Length: 352
Ligand code: BGC
Image 1 (cartoon, helix red, strand yellow):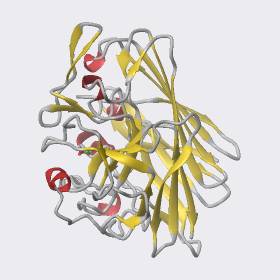
Image 2: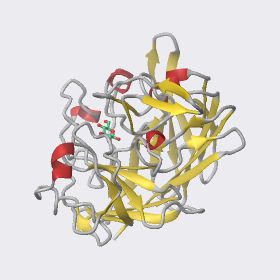
Image 3: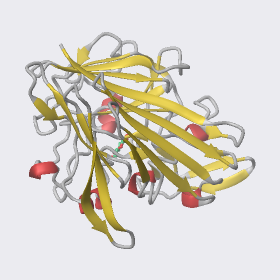
C-alpha cells in the first residue's frame, strides 16, 4: 500500500511530498521527494513491537540545511574527492569543495538535495521509481546523466534499492544511500552493543581530512576486522591511528573477492535487546562504515526533538572506493555511454 502525504513547501519549487509504503508483514518505509530520502523505516522486534530504526527530521528545512545526509540518495559521486579535482580524458575537472579540502557526496547540491520525480506503483510489494536528470557540467561533472532509483518494499520485510544510470559522456558515478540505522530505534541510545559482521578483508586508511592515503590494507589484526561478528563498541576505543584520525569508524571496507554479479549477503547487524537483525545484500564492491561521529549539530534535532548525538546511529553505505577517480589502483568509477550503471542493495529485517 502507498500513501502520498504533503511534507512541506520549498521556495522555487512548491509542495514537497513523502510516500509511505507498507507491506502485510508489519514493515513500512517513508520516502521523501527531496533526496529520495528514507525518512522513516518501521520494523517489528522480537515480540512484535514496531520501532522506527532510521534517523530523520520532522521538517523540510532541516533536510535542506543540515549536512548529515539522513537517509538520502547520494550522487553523482558519493564520498570524497581530494581537492574536488580530477582529470578525465586529458581534461581537468573541478567538483565543488564542500567538506574541508574535499568534495563530498556530490558537491554543493548533490542528488541528496534535489527533488526527484516519483512514480508510485502500488501492490503487495509496493514500489517507487525515482528519476533524476543531472545535466552535462552540473557540479563539475561531464555528461548528461539519467538516474533511476527503484525502492521496493518486499513481503519478506526487505527494502530493495536498485540504482541505474546512463550517460552520454564518460563521467565518474558512485551512487549510494545514506540511511543511519539504530536497530533499537533511532532514539534508543548508542550503537556500541550492535553486533556487526562485514565480509570485508581490506580497508582504506585515510588521513586527518578523511582522504585515502592510497593504501589498501588487510583488516587482519585491526579494528576493521568484522569478518567474525563483534560489537561496534568492542574495538572502538582501542589505540588505533585510523580511528583517532576519523573520530571513529568512517572508512571504506572492501568486500572479500570484490563485486559480485548478483546481490550477495555481505553484512549483518544485530541488536540484542530488541532482537532485530538487519542483513545487507549487495553487488557493490565496498561499504563506507560510518559510526555517526559527526552527529553533533544542536541546531537540527531529529524527529520528535531527539538530539543529534555521536555514535547513536551507523551507516552502511554500499559503494565503490572513495577518491577512486584519482587513484589508478582503486575501483573503476567511470561510466561510459555504452554501459549501464546497475547496482542493487537490499536491507532485510528479521528477528533472532
Ligand atoms: C562520510 C562522513 C560524513 C558523512 C556526512 C559519510 O558518508 O563518510 O565522513 O561526515 O557522510 O554526514
